[in-house]
Image 1 (tube, rainbow, N blue to C red):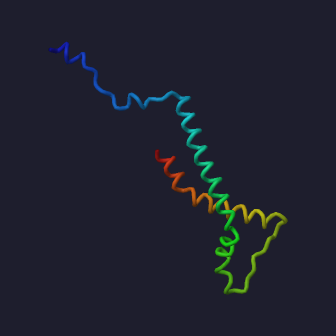
Image 2: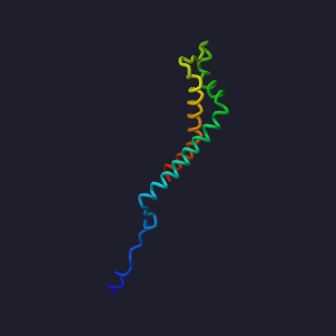
Image 3: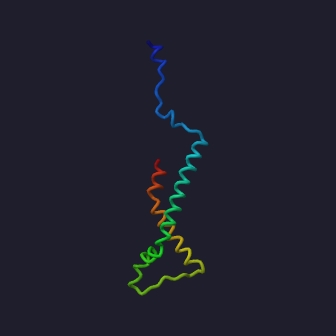
Length: 102
């Protein structure tokens, strides 16, 4: 009877989830590609309405007769890109959260 009890191996629930270092790196690459793709797609979508977003950001200044100023030669395009990227990241947050948690 003791021999029979020793012959039964305990079931390891994590046996199938053991991965090599290369498998971990490949999964990390896969998840990062999803995140980068989601942010890129969200940024492209946000670029279509970035003028509206910039007006929304500047709306609190409208009561003060203030105007936005570009102090450098590339500030206008960088503001457009930064607003689009920030909105694109906000759009992609569900996908980012899923891949960080999973």
